Image 1: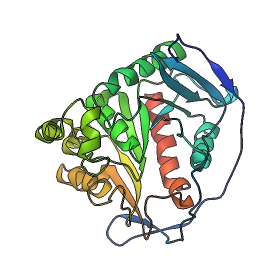
Image 2 (image 1 turned 180 degrees about the vertical axis):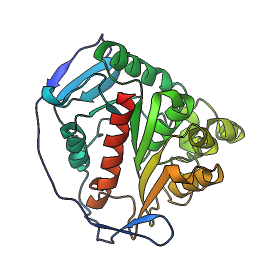
Image 3 (image 1 turned 60 degrees about the vertical axis):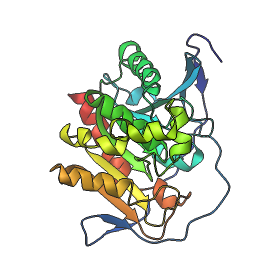
Image 4 (image 1 turned 90 degrees about the horizontal axis):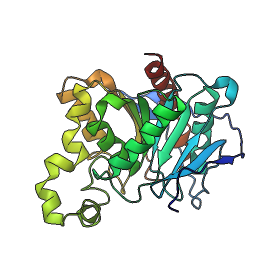
Length: 287
């Protein structure tokens, strides 16, 4: 798949308008209403209008709003993880909301990098192509789903000046919880012991204060019964670190009672997540 930039137009579209109701919890954290998860097979990859190409052998994509809704500079969302299966159909409603609002979505496949520094070189190339050649805004709102949280948080920590905000669906911020050290270490070119010794330097959760000090706002949704990506060590820990840094007003954690790491519809139709991302991306583009 190594080639120069080759663009292919994607023409599949679809619409959906349902939105789950929600209630505010008593602790300052938002809580969605409990609902039984829909346990189905993994949804297929999402296809929406846009382009795909390769960057040094890495597949990149961009979903584009229709011409009449585009602007200069173009507001956009940096999505992760971009993998053969992602973004997928579970996220269709969210991405259609972004495009309808005139916000583009882009990402690039760096494999199972788990936020390692070398992946940032590919992200930077995607960023420069979008900014310099296509008029995208210098700052993007990042969207990290599951292990994509490692991708976008590590990128934001390394380049806070290029990030306007972050949203996440059961995101990973601590690679010790997922994929765990034995799988994360090879991605970083280290042994498990070496990765432990460099935890404060390389683990996104250990450096979240960089985002708090840079005043990067964050909105997350996470199930309180997630066994794959535990709430307490990831999204809740990020919230605590923001609070400790005096930035509690910049983070909102929406807790989904009774939910784990699943395709429960409420994760992917959370209006507050979508509204924040759209507003954040547009404000960044208007500066």
